[in-house]
Image (tube, rainbow, N blue to C red; front, top):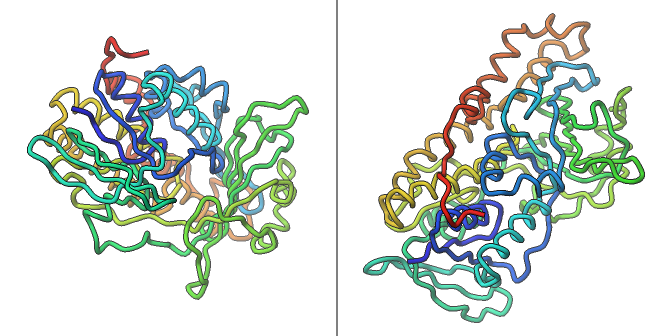
Length: 423
């Protein structure tokens, strides 16, 4: 029988491609009537790029994104704190890739349509409820735009890949409520600007209360510029009236630009980068508490429906891709059964629970906060403020928890063994 996938985002589409590669029938159901290339930039870490490469997508990723060369942390004054090579430069067998989220989404969608056919993705199908049957599960859908019934579909298992506002998670945990806001607001945009540093550098500057992140998501354009993705972040006072999280809410520059007005470094003019954007978006920083259980019989959670986390350490989408690959492996091993879903959860839930908690503690970005606390007026040499051992320990701990230590990842066998249906 068919695997039913609720949600046509990055995780759901990666799962569809993986199941096709494994010769397992599936169908994707997406709430919206048209999948549009929304959002801003995103990073794919080497362990996730490996999985997409094994799906035959590396050439497409290279054509659409940038192979990140290094990650560098700076103080609010633009002073260097810590930098480390990334991707191939760090010794991985696979690159780290920075790309527009919408471009990645459509890259995956195009691959699904090419390989599985147009009927594999049913749009305007919003899941309303589901019931287990004698040998599977039945999912019921409506068209949210018209309110009309969109039909019922039977499958062997149902996978909730429907994001942070998952209808399936809400059905399983009806008292959970809205996502948890931690008091921070992100303003995100893309600006065409001259390359900075190596032209393939991802930077983070500031500290826990006020932070700026940016990185290129395109190779140089004919005019010599690059598309630079940027994120301005601030922790707001408890009285701040936050608005519902939404990648598509237009940002107002006057609400946050003044805080970064003097962040002009000799290697990057942050106010100019902010004001040069065409569209910017506001996004309150939210996640959800880790769950004690994802799987209920023939239904399980995946990606942001299972473990929405702060976008710290470039790991949200990467973890959803890993979910899809591990779930595929277990469906191959156990068939489309509750046993497969249980085995998938046994591996992925503990790993992502630890990561959600670590991101709440600022992940590897805590080096910037430690510098701010110890030397708010600046420093001559960063090791006068943070020891080399402290710097290395913070970076290495995050790699261990997130599952992308160089030697371990390079030596790991593929998650999903190749199948004759693979393309």
